[in-house]
Image 1 (cartoon, rainbow, N blue to C red):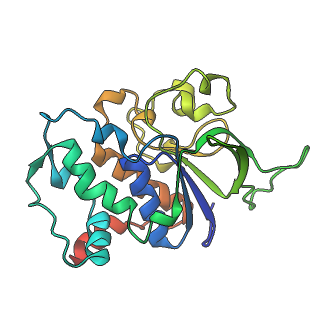
Image 2: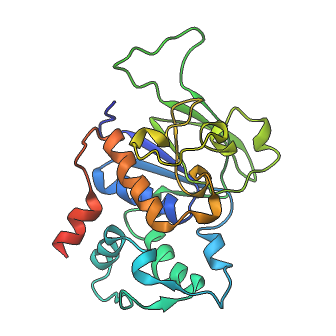
Length: 242
């Protein structure tokens, strides 16, 4: 079912896939709120300095275009350049998070501790309606509720003991651990519990085998659902224009 702009999309987690999903949404005209409990791309920033990643395999055409538009003086490394995870964070993801497209959408120190449908007791959603969601957000000083139209869980593979007790099925793995191996349909991204979406390593049957490029494919596929446009591919369109 299409969710038209200017709907609000909540992205849980400011890791690489969360930022890419938020960027994709913003370019399409959606309002975005990115909730991050800790720090932006923290796993990358604390990564093994001896490890190297390839720039081309760790960035997206859309992200590069956004940074180039933000600062025409910005110069990315060569596509095949090998850099450390921390350098990737500094030279790409942190700049992306600080760009005009995303900076006002970031809510750091904000933990999503619950998700539920935005429905009154006994209310039933008609087939052509979008009910939306209520999120419970905890910060250091308060606990609040936010209402959004779409939820994307890109919070990474870690599962906390607190999350186990929540009505928050995606934190425990896509479709309660059922394997999605071989399933290439966009619908594989839906959780069985509440029709919100799971991206990133958490969605993979084998989390250690999940690659950044797999996440970009998930982002692309997800927005064919949300925007209800089967041919939508901002990555291919941006790459063709560059």
